[in-house]
Length: 177
Ligand SMILES: [Fe+2]
Ligand SMILES: [Fe+2]
Image (cartoon, rainbow, N blue to C red; front, side, top):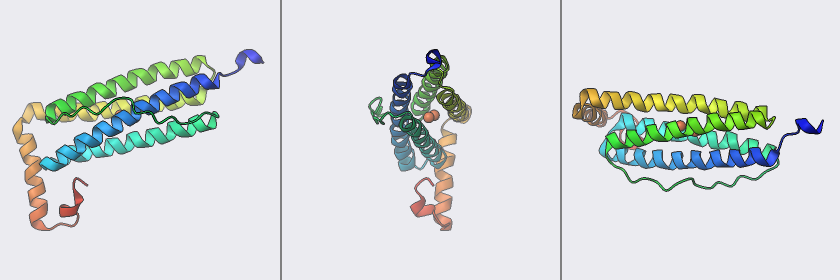
């Protein structure tokens, strides 16, 4: 039976590496959220925040698996935040990060398969689906920016002004909600 045994330490190592990547994304997207929110670009501010929340949920799923396998959660932050405030470059950076993540998770899924750890493999495959969807969402916004130029950003600011002036609940305090 020994030859079917899983190397738990190997899986824990991959899961912790993934947590570092998720924390990096979470920090980066919140940084982008703060700046988009500050400029009144509510649509983009919301997208970055919602995606950051999903990355946090990914951290949770990965951490649960680490603990199940008897390891500990390292919570290492993968990389320092890039202080980019140009919206086009923010979307570029976000797309690159998603691409790096789903490529890495595809490889991790394969490694977990080789390591007889099908539950971690399925988790990584689930993350690949989510990161590809995140990529698509950022790509769509980048397309919109290219198509509509500055009008795309101006419209978002105008929408917020309308919300403020009509006194809709959540408008003033919402801050990108
Ligand atoms: Fe993620
Ligand atoms: Fe993502």
